Length: 427
Image 1 (cartoon, rainbow, N blue to C red):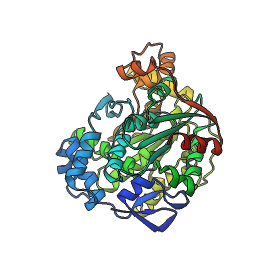
Image 2 (image 1 turned 90 degrees about the vertical axis):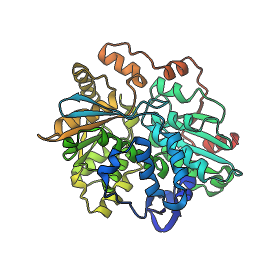
Image 3 (image 1 turned 135 degrees about the vertical axis):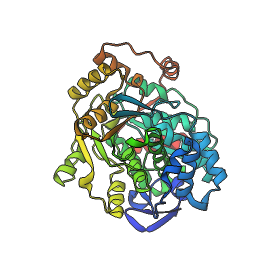
């Protein structure tokens, strides 16, 4: 598998190099030089989740890793289901929160850990540096916890993720270090990019990223789109519309890649909160990020989504117009209203899934089937959901366990020198 740097097409790397590096020169994202094509999608959809995912990921990775190795990686990573549930007539929820940290990031985080173990030399130091707006942190921390020769440093915006999200990954210790940054998620992302631009630091600590900018995480996410369609009645597959709650836009990128290799999806909808850089861009043609606004859907509080260049590149390669993407933005009041409506339908959701459901419900045409992604368990946003619905959601076992533990996070300013000191101290 060859991948090229979107900012320098002359820089081409293998899958292993892309996994180890995370980013190319000038903070460029890696993108597959060739996309596999599946002509036998109906046969693929008949397979079980692990077998089908192995086929998809092997087609991307090529001969670089043996098929048996990829199969073992997938089997180790995907040890939980991604079921669809009917919410109302013609609309289904794809539940991606049945993994160990109760969020969709478990799929990508665990597959990345398997990938890095498969392609890395056992000798050198590896330091995973990543920023999280909520769920990435837990997925990455748990995926790499206790792995030999790998240190993990996770940045998150202080006071801007839910308390239970924080407890789930800031209580581990060991090879996992967490840093509460006095700033926004976009500030955390900027610090990560600065670190990758520092060639000396990058070499010194063996820097790697586990954000959705890492190609292994992105490829893993393609698989659950196929799993969702496989569970739909065949009659509902041809007119399928999928709404994706979007912050950093890795999830939507993976969905569009699934469509590009043959998955039958009529169209996608990019659903955001009031941090609506992409919806405004699709409406006006002007890329104009504004300061990030805190919302109750905090994992989507992103004003400068890192993965958007991949979407533009894929659309260019496939000849798709950006105008074919549906879009919408929802404020907190509308999100709360939608959560109450969904409960009346008999489905308990959380803010991110509710945003995708609302926009899907508004834009779905007659004869179409709708699917929206539920990216986290409602209990991860217990304070918000309890208040809106007047409930007392019971904590699943993983959350209850970590909720009783002490936070181990460092607190730092939005300052690169302070980050460098942390990275050197964990070696």
